Amino acid sequence: MQFLGSQRQILTPDVIPTLSLYRSAPPLEVRLDDFELFAIDRLRVLKGISDGLSRGKKPEEMEKLVPELWRANMRHPDASELFNKDIISHFVLRLVYCRTEDLRKWFLSMETTLFRNRFRAESPGAQRALMTEFNLPYKALSNAEFENLKDKLSQAARSIGQPLPTADAIFFKVPFEEVPDLVAGRRVFMLKGYAYVAMNQVVSLVVTRFRSLLSKALVLTNRKWTSTIREQEKDRLTPIVEALSTMYLGPDYSQPKEFAEVSIKDIDQVANSSFPLCMRHLFEKLREDHHLKHGGRMQLGLFLKGVGLKLDDALAFWKAEFSQKVGAERFDKEYAYSIRHNYGKEGKRTDYTPYSCQKIIASTPGVGDHHGCPYRHFSEENLRAALGKMGVGGRTMEDVMDKVRNRHYQLACTLTFESIHAASCDTGINHPNQYFTESQKILQAKNHSMT
Ligand code: SF4
Image (cartoon, rainbow, N blue to C red; front, side, top):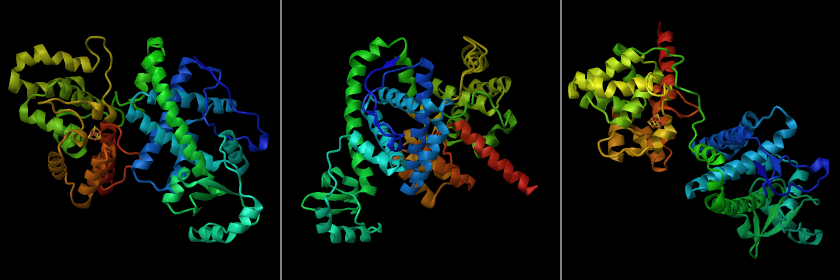
């Protein structure tokens, strides 16, 4: 694939920023593999930022987290390719995240946070170069203007704990609406509709400009995507682009690893101690109704395979329940096939992968279905009752409900996990099988320390 357009202007080496403004796609040939792999790496950075923000991390904590995420994911074996990887991955994700209002909002917010943190890390010279490249039309205050306002600027600096401006300090006079975060935080001196922005605050100016350009660019990309690219690329890029926005980026749970086996005799006990709410609910409904519809059988069946229930045990387990409702013969005829199928023993013999939280949360259970994510799909009353049964209450219950109201379902699940295990889960819950594995680790460690 070819990215077209012009690259950055020539700059002297001491002020070359490592950060791109992504004004236009560069003229680069990109291999299809890199197209996808670079995008996945950037997505890991953006997802990490999103988790950090929704866990309520403070700006100083984000300042630490963002470079860590960047270093961990945006490496390249050839250091000279780093800049290209940055640009290519950004433009691929523009395609991925231009397609709906919600996707655009998320991408805009994560890319802006990433940009803000990377801009801050640039040298003052590189920051000035980026401002010029953005054509920010602000002139620094002249000496005479600075002398006139010096006392007021000093007062403002003192009130926000900033160093007092010296004679060589640089300030920009800008319309106040262009630095909304500085104005809202009362961190800038204002006079007659203008804000006087110190050099160490210019990040606010640049970020506002970055956000507004990216927002417009996403709308334009969406138009191009719907009018031409989607159809033109239907056999090549379109399937990759469509899969990327819902891609699960965590470990593979298709084969049980650390806790290799769960047998039928242990299953009730581990369900009670280590199943996340989505699986607990399916498990209880199966025991109660001796039946689950297709969506529920897939969600629970693949999860059980991932926690180490062997095929023979799985057949015996499902048969014991279903035969109470439909009879053993009908179970063998109609249902056993799909269980063997999940284990790759029928049909295309694909080994099917347990569902991630993202996939479960995005599902749309109908009437009589019990699959899905309770944090997303239960009514508030039912969710409170289910959490109460797991032992969640008091302040934690309100914190969980607060996350649910803000549509942070995985964080609600993480808080539940942390509360019932009395342990923290820093990575957050991304997969029901990860919930199970983390839970078993904690419980086994507790058992060992007691023996
Ligand atoms: S967040 Fe994930 S693990 Fe937790 S209940 Fe929802 S789907 Fe299950």
